[in-house]
Image 1 (cartoon, rainbow, N blue to C red):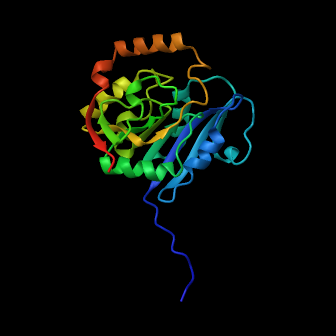
Image 2: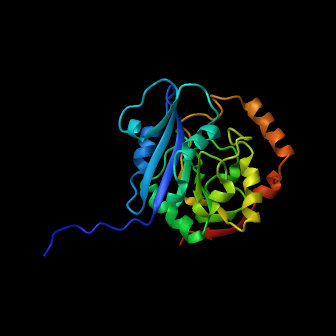
Image 3: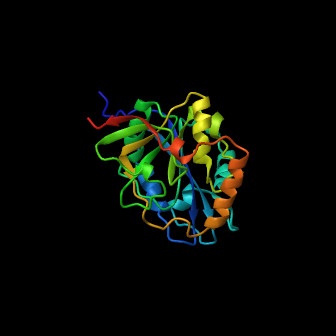
Length: 247
């Protein structure tokens, strides 16, 4: 008779990629630790470091790219993804370096995403977070929503069914501004579902947004970007097709 423990079989592979500002206060290290807590999925975290300050272990072990000059976020994310065989992963998360997630977030979140067949998704934001679009604020009593909008950050999740549609990220929107009004057009054209998970929201209050890049420049580039691409308006985007209550 053997005393060997039988380890649960992984449900699949998850990739987390992000950019952290090494010379600014950030939460990349504790966030990485939280995301690696999964008991159901095999998770890899791959970060790009922007800045001169070197990271300490264990974050240094999760840092794949070291970039000293200023670069736009989604350009860097594409550099990370280009070095990785994305077909190996069932889900890819793109995360910012200034959020806090609930314990065992990956397991809890992907349980709902899988159940609702969301190919593109995001967790809602807590009410104490900085919020750009109040459509993504957590709805109390709701598990998740089938929507026409998923925000570009601070955390967004891609299922493998969306990779060929949305990845690599369009660098004509180098900070991501505007992609969340174009993604619904692409998702709908390919018959893919997108949604927001309210049950497990993220906290985004550590650092005020748009502190370290130019708002006016990003806004101008977004409007130019829209001129040549099919996109939805705010009114067309902020639509919930179906809500799934907590049971």
